Image 1 (cartoon, rainbow, N blue to C red):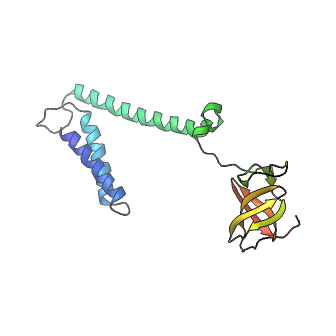
Image 2 (cartoon, one colour):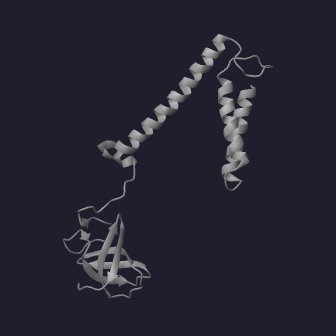
Image 3 (spheres, rainbow, N blue to C red):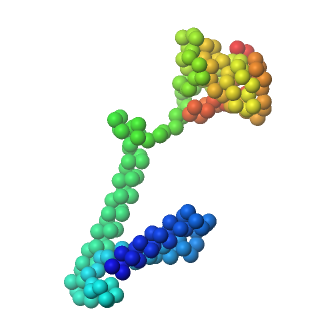
Length: 183
């Protein structure tokens, strides 16, 4: 039971370090050390009144087998996490479990969130499109490009309603505009 108590004390110290004490210091290091000692102590069969340390050859074999199992499990977890991080977005029926930012790459037209339904047939806006501000940009507001109204961010300036703007960047759902251009 001593091993379990040491393990629980380690978890409590680590939680105190995370939620109560700023930074990373003695409580965190002691907590990690207690967790490791508690886990290794649980791998050894011992009497309740004795310190958990392998006494016989059989105890050492059980101890090393337990360590190999822990290291193998951790390595397997790391490999599985890496594989999921790399291939999860590419698996069609599981791709919704991971948020992947939209990138423009070579494509300059993207579908982005609209603040109002389009009044014309045009559904997409892209870099270089010109439009008019529909609400003052301080620096965030909306602008109309053709029949599409889009939430936009002005680059380094405040723009008034009816100012002419041009899209210069699209990052996911963030559309950056600058003053100028003709609608």
